[in-house]
Image (cartoon, rainbow, N blue to C red; front, side, top):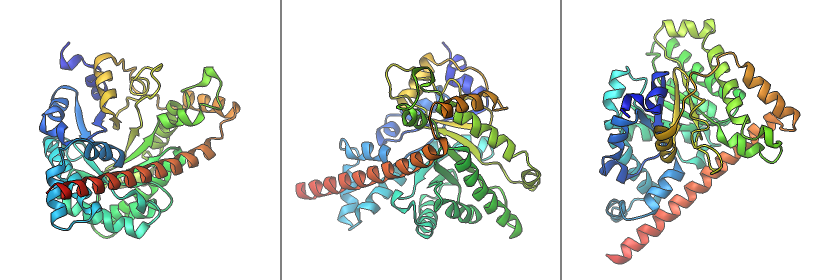
Length: 365
């Protein structure tokens, strides 16, 4: 099978960007990430605290850098961001040619602000600006949660020209709140005479809907809500960017905030690992894929063509889930809070592991 025939290449041919949802130093050192770019149509990369917890907490790949930074008196959080930026700038350089070829639309990597700032608008803005400046790469997104407190930070950061990956979105309403924040930031740039071209993606989590609704739904409706909600969101995306408001901004040189499908791996071994990826292909979208899912899709994926644009089937499936007892607005809010708390736990676990590693390295000196 040639690369052009791979299911990953077929998804790319639909106009979807495939981003790896993983980063480790060994992926970089071994040339594996470069191979994924070359052979599996990978055009970007995302990271989060859970990913770095696994990467830094296991093995000795980061020991030398941790020891050097600790000897300089860096705090545990400073050590983490230094390690993360070292990895992500290397990854960003691998995607630099794609970034240039796509006129800055693709070829991105993402670094998250501290999840502990999720309810701190001012603190989020300050840290995001500082991290983006430190990284010094035009193709590095700063990830900011699309919580009620995060949306004002997103608007301000877009106004300041900081590219943002909005994370922790679950519903069309949450997506539209993030899109509004992005749009207001662009409109403020236009009013100030600044370049309106500032890229952003809005990350909508898919599979967590199915895990969150599993206890309520009968067998015939299991694992239908996530894909249906993605269909509703996609219809909202198309409608939002078809408005006169956005057509005017596009005419001035702005670019739309692409929707990104996140949480597209499956945890249940009874399900196809390609369940979500096969049906979420669509033009001008992104799918950030766990490494094991990427490999499964490349081997046995079967993309079904582009997503429907009318939302009819999606609304029918969501209506069935509602009738079966799923409170969609309540679950969307719960999933966002749960996601925030999960990232907080991963962040604290990550810092604890770095602290333990720092102490053991110091004792061994």
